[in-house]
Image (cartoon, rainbow over all chains, first blue to last red; front, side):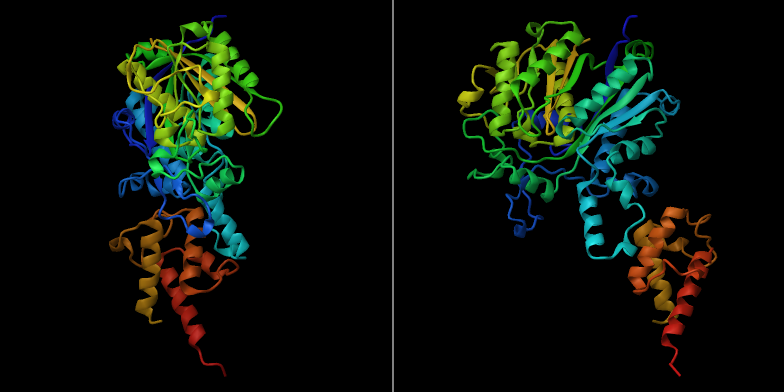
Length: 408
Length: 88
């Protein structure tokens, strides 16, 4: 039986570089970085107080009615706002999204980190009597997914893959599978994440977070660079609307691109150290699924978070699988690492590159590291038509995910 | 606390926690039907009132019987009177 085709017909985001896809893209192209000093983080935490936060305009979150907002942590608010925009962009009707044929698949590393910390403090202070009734709903792992689904009245499958930094891309892959198999006709999919000092501290403990860079914060996230010092945490939400091809064509939807391949796999060995062999295997599985050749790829949106080990392993995998002729860049220099949201936010940026026939460079890449060399690193904005691009995500837990998109 | 202070404190809880405008806060309003709260909100209402009045309400049977905003006012007015009653 022929597989059903799945296309992207809407996108929306809540990002540290803007809440509108056009503004977000323009800031990326202008070489802006959202990384800054986090004044609100206590210096008692003894962590490098830098991150790439979302700044919401005053009153925006109150556009979500209180009955929906009361169970949302910051992450779910980002997700709901982004999903509302994605749905609006797609032109799908409320009648359709309430038909049971539209899924909501949104991943994140965990529930709202800020809410989990609040709940922990209440328990530690032996003050459980004053625990808000909705605290659990902010902390639950599927918080962004169910909050967004309820806010938008989505009655299809509600799923929430939790695979750390691959969560958002896994959500989109899962949405693709649901539509391809015929279980659903459309899906709102993506990832959401909120940045907290506790998460940053966890990365610092493992020597994965940027530390020791002496320049201004906006230069501190340096993927593939010889002087990279680790990742900088970011936050936000990216949501795309996936739809069965014929369904989209029939209603005259604007088609952003087609998902032609997807794969996810475990490395089977280590919780935190990516290994190039399993990354190659993941990309190979995705290309077999897409039934196209790696040589047909016009652009690779790398995971590259600026960690010493991760960037080198990914570069090695790309060299081995694609050779040195396929353009590669990472957007972590602009956005920091938005963890579970990164796959979706960077996919949206890549779709916009494809629409505009332009490749965005890796920011802060003055000197390419020897262990990341041998690739066609995009180092300035490049005019180029994209017909096929790849989005990679690699996550703690040894999880890989690769998605392949094609211009329609 | 005077009766007026108690009412003002309760109204503040409804305004801050449930974003209800002050003009809707009249004693005849039913908490579920007129003010739009549900069972989850009632838990948060109790938490908010506990913090504001410095008392524990979870095991209090009487507070569970309130229907209108006026009932909430009267519950706390009575509670305050009990607190202030001279010990014999």
